[in-house]
Image (cartoon, rainbow, N blue to C red):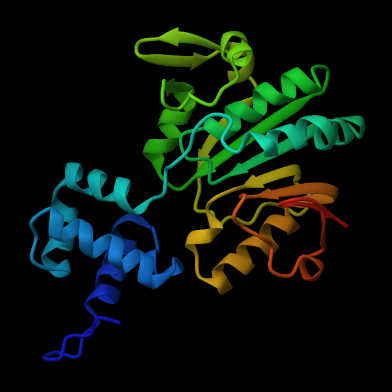
Length: 264
């Protein structure tokens, strides 16, 4: 903890509170050591002496605020990221869910939409007659706006199988745009994953990958409990390939595949 020996003030905590008031994003929910290092390194590299002065700059300079948000919000993604998880969905999970009726999917922490559009393509290829709706949520309004455009760079598409790239995306500029058939399945909303409480049983499939690893353990466990609550009985939660639900049974889940859990 960084507390000034002269004033006894935890300047990082003060910064986090000011930033929360400015943006609504609560940095204290993340693992402190990682987030504090991320913030201080960025501020120093931008040539600013301290957090208090930098907070004042963020309040006054929209471009600087956008640059800082890019640093502290985790927007690392790509189409078909961790393809083995999508293979499991295609082979086993989606056909089972579609057999029971419409498939309602939540991409939680959707960033700029790569996961949601991948899900849309996998659903169309695997369960083409199913009624599918995909909702992507992210705290960053800029990412939500970008996701709605459905445009991805060549780097975003580097892991897409060639046949899928030809089928589901069209060249645009220096990248690709999702075809209308996919765009019709997805919608994106701004929302704080740590505050959202969907109606119980709202979804058949929830994907929340590579997000919870940044949160403190109590925050992570609360998030997983709320994700589980959002599933209907028999619904499925997929977490990231480096993540796990700490107490699956305690939140009504049972593991069925690696990183994949079914609601009891």
